[in-house]
Figure 1 (cartoon, rainbow, N blue to C red):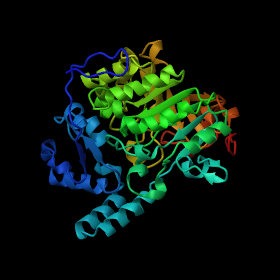
Figure 2 (figure 1 turned 30 degrees about the vertical axis):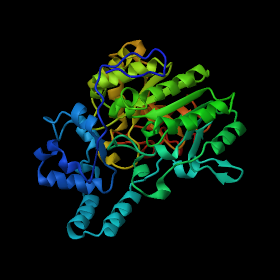
Figure 3 (figure 1 turned 90 degrees about the vertical axis):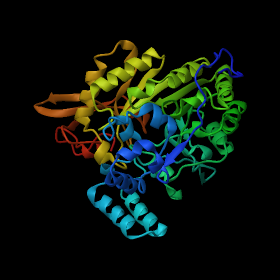
Figure 4 (figure 1 turned 180 degrees about the vertical axis):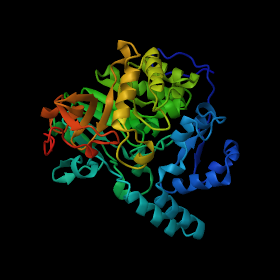
Length: 442
């Protein structure tokens, strides 16, 4: 079909225009594909889905999941609740309430009790990252690193589909004090004016590209019209390319969105689409490849990132394939993260030593164009910590680590050492090496 284009150099489309259809805890049993699962499996999904957010859509269900491999399919694991996401005690408590009570209040009460035990806001997001302006906190803003401010537009605090591992799961479960959101950009603009060290703003969520283009444009146009000389880059963190690529091609406001991207780049700002691709299958459809092409035509750059996640992509061959395909499509591999210490980390987390081995094995099998990627990296309270490897120093086996980004800029690129621990999943599980009582940044 053809579309009317408002952005320059956008080619005519040949893919169809599907209508978005969401599947949630309330209607997932209506999916024909789900009928192959046992009642026990369906009930387990409902138990977990009452604690963690669950939403998927027809593109994920029909184009990305291999239903012949369910329940072990990686994209199914990525998007549908898994029993093991709850520890046995938590699972049994939630299951007991569902079996014995139809009271929505009791169900929600138990779900919230469990949620608060799952470290809903890791890395000091609530305590350390929220800035102030004229004595008032900016609830929809985080400013952890000197050059970059995170902005949570209020209407972008949901997604086209939810990743089961997502560290931002508290955004979607209805607990107001766990949410970040900001309705207006005026305070944000004032804050940036007072902090000329800020060169980058990252629109995040949720997913900012869940918003209609008209809504997104009100935020971005305000930033452009504010004429902020220090602001060089606008980043948009999104899973839309993987979970709903029609956002950029056949949705009613797709061409309007591309025109907005073009306006940003023509204004002299760098536009970086920070796209989350978790598995190579997300890169394989005609729809996503068309979407990538159309974004690149606007002058925007697509950078790719994902955590390494048990049961989904914890094999080096998966990452080698993913990075190669991303480069082939003109994207820039950016980060391999470590699963954060929140939510279902016990199920999805990969030990640091194994994450490093996966990264190293995949990294050595790709060309230099893929070696823009950094990892494995932990987004911790003090900053982004990269695991450089395991080494024997002074007769002691140690982790070699460094800061890629730090709350204190002086920490960046400083190597440090931690005692080797084959089970450690996160920085707070590591101890300083060589008899030191604490790490230099503590």
